[in-house]
Structures are given as C-alpha cells and as structure tokens.
Image 1: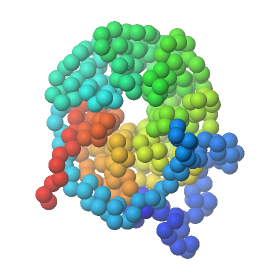
Image 2 (image 1 turned 90 degrees about the vertical axis):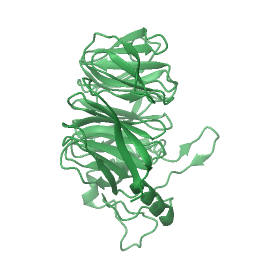
Image 3 (image 1 turned 120 degrees about the vertical axis):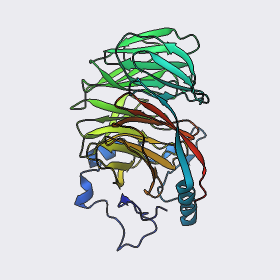
Image 4 (image 1 turned 60 degrees about the vertical axis):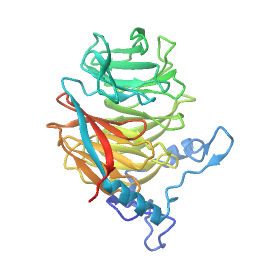
Length: 372
C-alpha cells in the first residue's frame, strides 16, 4: 500500500473507497496516458511477465502492508549519506561495473577506479571526443563508450584494448545501455535515432528514427525485454528487444532528460525539464503520479537495487533522495557547485555517484543509521 505522500495522486487503488479512488480516466490524467490503440498493441507484453520458470507474476502496485511501509520509511530517514571521494576534470559520463568492483569515468580517456579505495586501476586512452556515455556489460568484462562524435567503442576490460568500433546513424550519441545477454546494446543520438546493436556485428541490427528531437536517455527493464528511450520531444518510447519493434509511447508533457526502471519491475520514472519526476506502471501503461520538490530541471534519475530509494539530480546543483514507496523526500545532498547531470547507484545500493556539469564526480556512501 502506498501511503499519502508527495507523489501527486499516488494512491493505492485497492485500499480506498470508491468515492476517494483516483480515476485515471479523468481528463487531468489523459495527457500522460498511453493511447488505446497503443495499449492494445502492447497488451501482450505490457502485462503479467512470463518468468523463465513458466510462472506468471503480476506486479501490482499495492502489495506492501502499511506497517512495512512505515518501518521502511523510518529506516530510510535514519540513514546518512556522506561524500567520500571527489574526482575533478571529468566528463558527465559515469558507470558502475555490475560486479561492484569498478567505477568508470573520465574526460576523453576512460578512468577505471577501484570502488573500495578510489584508486586508479587503469586508464583507457581514446581520441573520439569528450565522453558522453559509458555502459558496462552485465558480466563486467567489456565496456562501451561514446563521446561527442559518431563513434561507439567496445573495450576489453582485462586488457584495456579496443575490440570493435561502431559508426552510428547520426552525430553525437547521448546515451548507451547494455542488454542482459552481454551482446545486445542500444544507442540514442542527437539525430532523433535509437539503434539496436550486437557487439559482434559492425552494423546496427535495427535503426529507428521515431522521435522528433534528440534522444537524451535510454534504460532497459530488469527482465531485459524492454528498452525505453526518452527525448526532448516530451515522449518516452518503449521497444521490444526480442522483436526490435516499438510498442508504446508515453507523453511526459515536458522534455525528458533521464529515465530509469525500478529493479523490482513495477515502475519506470523520468526526470523532466519542468522540474517534475513522473512515474508509470510500464506493464499496464498506467500513469501513477508526479513527484514534486525540485525547483529546476531534473537532469537525472536513478533507483537503487531494492527499489526503495530513488535519487534525482537537478540543475540547481542538488541531489534529492526519495522513498519510492511513499514519495517522501529522505534527504537532500549538497556539494556540487553546478547542475547535477548524471547519477548512478552501485549494484549493492550502498554508493551513489553523481556527475556535475563542471566535471566534478562525487561518490556518496550510505552510512549507518543516525542516532537522531
């Protein structure tokens, strides 16, 4: 059950009376909903997930008891977060290796840092522009990178050698994301393009010019089947990675800078130019609500490993942590002197890395419960 919170209209449908129930068919929600034609097109995918075991799991949004939510909220409030490392003269590209050992960042070259010590493990030299995006393969053996160019590079992390180079549809790739099979990856660029790739193939498997403006961000669902692309054109599109087809379009009513799926498979969230964070149930297409609290553009959103905390980075230089079950603000992290452009949680959720517009990368460590 979701408690009353700062998430506008974030109400448990199963626990309120008919008189108080939120009606998502009202016109005030129509701007955010998937059209009926799109809903019918996606119904075979955006519905209960078929697990490998054959068991069908319906991911509801009102499964957690009130006391559990309250206890979780109290524990999250009590946690402290401290900045333990600051790395200067970097780009806005940051990524954690899925095995939890490395942090990748850098300017034109790629720096691989030991997560425990903060020490430099390896430098990978490249010459295709300032880094814009980095993504590790799920097995942590390879890394893809791109800068302000038309190139994507694939790197062997054991040797530091380049494996392959890919030429994209348009100049300046804004976003990269790896698929669950360690072979598939996707790119989004300033030419309004989403491309699907296989690491073994020189050319893209599929190219979609379906957005009307830059593609700013990409994310893949926890089951590895769905790719989301977010654009300046105020839309989020969902793509089936098994068939390489578009299955839905969501209207965010504002340019979208960042997007994230919750690891528990229930939600996707986006950060927008209007300073709001918007939430959907991606399996049903249902608009869940809006989190308000930032005073400027929300450049980045990230969700931790157990889907309890969402982080948002703002153009006003602040980072806010939110209880994703209640929508309540947990804390505000201050330390950047300019806009926060990128955020990512470590695989265990114990660290958060933020990248500022001035190239300052900060590592935030979750501490013990405070005594206050």
